[in-house]
Image 1 (cartoon, rainbow, N blue to C red):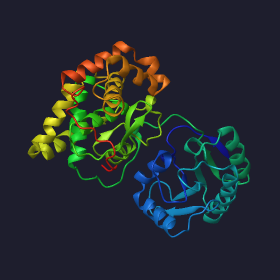
Image 2 (image 1 turned 60 degrees about the vertical axis):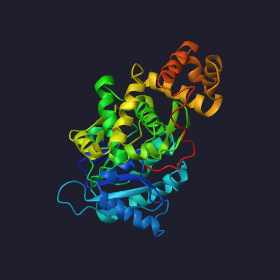
Image 3 (image 1 turned 135 degrees about the horizontal axis):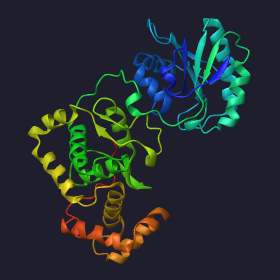
Image 4 (image 1 turned 90 degrees about the horizontal axis):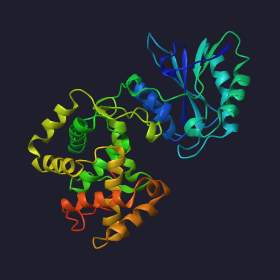
Length: 362
């Protein structure tokens, strides 16, 4: 019997949970990241299988939990050949055939199945659902619970059994800056986190974040990796990283995180001073919109127009960035941001060095 379910697949009371994976050993986002956090030993076995060349599309990787409660098996279903690639319908079909074989061979009586190849895989549910129902219909006596695409699972509802990462100076500055900024802004979006850390690096903090010219302003993809590692240990809100950025939850430090960060920074006065500089700079711009404006103007002046450009030239460069900025940021807004930067000797004097080209790592 096949029934449609809603909610968190990992909470399903079934014999087996099906996870969507690639064949190269990466579980960096979405459902796969949730499984990695919930079952660290499974991830290690999956990673070993990938490194040894055992993983291939059309063939299930089965891991037995060995637990008295919860699912007996995690079935890793390869829906992608590489995490950078999309999913292919023929790979889904081939995999479903092997999934049926595994369910029968192991005597599985109930199984939870995600929307194979949808979401990050790029396939449409209208294409995938008929394949799944057709392939699994012959499983007489098996309770198949099919989870269609749905809204992201709240971050707080995601299990995380991974070892807590050590607090480092870079992580401590992030947590401390977020905590103090949050006292004014209340809710801190991922966009704001990106801009705060951009300014902290511009202030001289050695974060090695690789900022590029992104859609919403300066953006460092390796900062997402940092947030992913801290999620559930020092912060909450990033979740599995699958939510669109404008729909994502606020990033919030967890209880005890700021105390740990403050303790580590106790003998680092330079870092504490840089945090104060950033908070002073963004005063009056504490919002997603305000920080996108301020950081975009700073990027343009430091990397495009130069210190001698007038307000009109800077505004034009901001508008040329992309249509979004052309719609949102008026010349008056740009001038306001420039005035704030100049008041703190960030433009046109540019007393904070531009760190373009610093290799990513955090």
